[in-house]
Image (cartoon, rainbow, N blue to C red; front, side, top):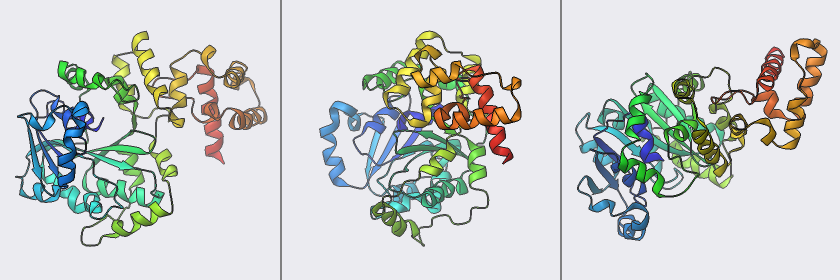
Length: 374
């Protein structure tokens, strides 16, 4: 997913840099896009030697003429590169509690990346929310936002988030991205793994967007404690959070804006001009069901008729009265009942795929107004 995500923003990318080889699948995803030259920096010799074990998954990616492997520290490789060299940088290092890795989450590193990106280029940055507290997770997000004026967030697995950072605050050209994802080699790579839980279409990729620049502007307003190489706070705080088994669940919920009415998400803009037909709707539903994220239940409900909803939710939804016919006290009682029995109606009736139902969306608005007035 990380290897393809950047092409949503720079569909005509020609030069890419990858921080870390891993199993080689990220590099294989990037190089599947026609005309792209890829430089991979890998510090560990053992990882390079182990690459042959993953050929069934990544192909002989290191043997491709478009791919250059550099055995060294990614920071040093970027220092040696000329300014404005790359259209795309993909960074998927190890967890920051591992010695030395925290340097790849600092203001210094992000500034180095930005200086090596061409205008409009993007950084795709992996980050986890497991075994890290809300405070440290926020500092990580806001260190990135401290350097780049625009940040978008996409969910990966239950414990991981992909961040896309750019100096360009304008939204991506989705029509151009759609064409890029139709290239035969890209389609083959997207569908070749056979795993439904990994997005293999533009619909599915856009459905994973959690939020955009406005959310990060709000969360990071007044932020003044970016991670720095010369003051390695993250090196010490990350292991503490790991051993304490903390989880940045609260902030993860805050950056997921998919059930906020009118939120300017890319999926909403795409579907306004490319509405889902039944095959695309079924494919998107299967994708959202393959690795069920609790916060995505409203999106799954919006894709199916009420007769396919869970029995309790269906019985409540079908019995909902018109809120305009009730008194203030009756609306309060109904909102309290919904919050206890079916919070998905009380809190999340809206999605970028449309409302879970018109009546449910009306009650979401009523209950939201009541919460806001308290």
